Amino acid sequence: MTSGTLEVFGLDVNVHQREIKFKMGVVPQENNLDPDFTVYENLLIFSRYFDIPEDEAKKRVDELLEFVHLEERRDTMTDSLSGGLKRRLVLARALINRPRLLILDEPTVGLDPQSRHLMWDKLKGLKKQGVTIVLTTHYLEEASQLCDRLVIMDNGKILVEGSPTDLIQEHIGSAIVETDKDPKVISCLDVHQVNYEVLGEEIQIYTDKPQEITDHLLSECKLTSVTARAATLEDVFLKLTGRKLRE
Amino acid sequence: MDIGMYFKPPELTSGAFKVWRRNKDVFMKNVKLNFLPPFIEPLLYLFAMGFGLGMFIEEIDGVPYVNFIAPALISVSVMYGAFFECSYGSYVRMYYQKTFDAIIATPLSIEDVIIGELLWGATRSTISATLMLPVIALFGLITFPHSLLIIPFAFLAGLLFACLGMCIAAVTPNIMSINYPILLFITPMFLFSGTFFPLNVLPEIVQYIALAILPLTHVVIIIRALTFGAPGWFLLTNLLWILVVCALGFVVSVNMMKKRLVV
Image (cartoon, rainbow over the protein chains, first blue to last red):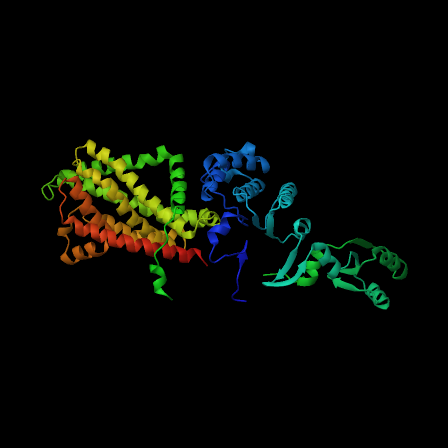
C-alpha cells in the first residue's frame, strides 16, 4: 500500500495537523524528555506549546505530578530519573493538554513489574474517563490487559483483528495442554485424532476441554508430565506469526 | 531531485517564539556562566593582540591597532555566537536530546522549531555584542552613540550566521563532521575578513572573493564604521548584501532541516 487517507476526529491529518495535535497526547518509545530542565519545568514548558495559560498550567502540572506519583521529584533534572520514573513523566507530559486521544508506543518496554503495573493502572483509569488509547506493544499480556480491540500485525500486514478473548477463542480455544515431545506420545495422539502441534521439545494440544484431554492422555497415552493452562494472546500471536526469529 | 523545494518560503507563527523561549529559559538557568565569556574574551584578545602585538604595529588606516581590531572582535563574536548555537547546539538538541521530536508531537510544526532555533541563534549574537560593548568602551576604543546601532545590527548579522550553522546541522552526518565546515569556512572568515589586518593588503582577487562569499567581511565593515563613528551611505551596499544572503539562507536552511527531519 502506498497511499490512502487518515482522519483523526474526522479531520484529515494532512490538512489539520495543528488542530489534531491540540487534542492528542503522545508517549513515544524513546523517552525524549528535555534534559535541560527539571521534572516540573518539563511539564510547564510543554504546556506552553499547547497555549495553556500559565496559572492553569501550574495547576495541571501539580495534578499530573500527583497522578504519576512524582511530587517528590519535581525539582530533579530528568537525566537522573530511573527508567520507570522517566516513563511516568513522559505519560504525565502527554496528558498536559487533557487529550481525547492518547497514542503510546511500547509504553512499558524495559520497566520493572511494579512500574509496569502502575502504568497499566493509570491507562485503565484514563480509559474509564473516556480517553481513546491507541498503543503498540510486543507484550501480549499488556495487550490482553488494556485493549478492547486489537490487531496483530506482521510485516506491515494486519493478520487478525478483534477483542483479546475472541481472538484466543477463535484461534486456540480456551486452553492448552502441554507435554514433552516423545514419538510414542505423538503416535498415540494421532490414533486418537487430537489437534496438536509440536513446538521444539514440546507438544501443545489446543482444546476447550483441558480436564478431559488431560485425563484421557494420562490413562491412554501413559504420559508422565502434563500441564494444562489457559490459552493466552501470546499463543495466538505465535501461532499466527510463527516461531522464526524476526529481523 | 526537485531543487525548488529548498526555496519554499516557511510559515512564521507564534510557535517559533515558544521554541525561542524554551532556549532562552535554558540560557537563563546558567545565566552567570553564559554571561562571562563575552566579558572575558574581548579582554584576552585586546591584551594579546591589541596591546601586545599592537606594540609592533603602527597605525592602520590612521587608527591605533587596538582600535582597529576592537570592532573585529565584536564581529567575530557575533559570528561565533549564532553559528555555534545553530550548528553544534541545534544538532545536539535534534540528534542527542530529541528535543525537536518531542516538540513536534505538540501543535508546533517543524518550521516553528527551526525558526525558533534561528531566532535564538541571532539572539545569542545580540547578547554577545551587547555585553562586549561596555567592556570595549571601557578602554575608550569605540564611539557613541553610533556604536549602539551595533546591537540591532548584531541580530541581523547573527541571523545570517545562524542560518549558515543550521545548513551545516542539516547535512552533517555526525557531530564530529561539523569541524570541517568550521575549518574550511569559519576559520578562514575569522582570518581573512578584514578582521586583524585590512582587506586591501591581500591580492586583489582574494579581496573580491572575500567580498563575494565571506559574510563576515561585510559585518566587519559595518561594525567598524559604527565603532569609528563614521557611517556612510557606502554601508548600504554591505547591508543589502547581508539582507539578501540572510533572507536566502533563512529560507534554504529551514527547508534543508525540514528535509532532514521529515523522512
